[in-house]
Length: 185
Image 1: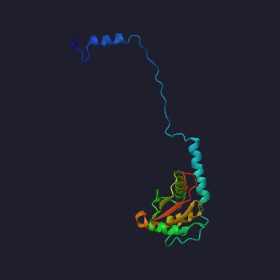
Image 2: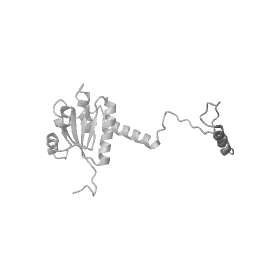
Image 3: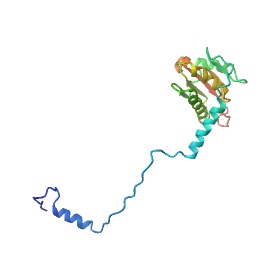
Image 4: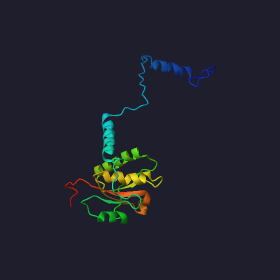
């Protein structure tokens, strides 16, 4: 196979002829193109879950209701009918949080949604203790987060977190988990 000295192509004319013979029966096919939109479609299940989360946060967490708990000092709450010793155990750090939610930089409305999501996730995964880091900042979330959490029926105890979990800028909460055969002792 000789190269054509006058051609700039690195392939010889014999190779080109051989290639053309091998594809002689081929035909051009139509290229199907599909253009995707930039906006992904939200499934109905996902949309329903978002609406449910929004409804729960609006239902449980009201700005109108102000519970009788002191949010200026140490936050301390135990639901009626629960052991008062739970608050002391939370203060001492006897419970290790399974989940931590950081609310830094969020406004009250987004914080409500995130709190509802945290409580839902704790119940779903059977987590008994969680930490909510609200920060100190302008004291808005520092006052509102405990007020929101007291309103939820699944929060059985809450106390300002020990230093290793955030101190004055966080609260530890205990969640009322559903009783099932596998969790009973």
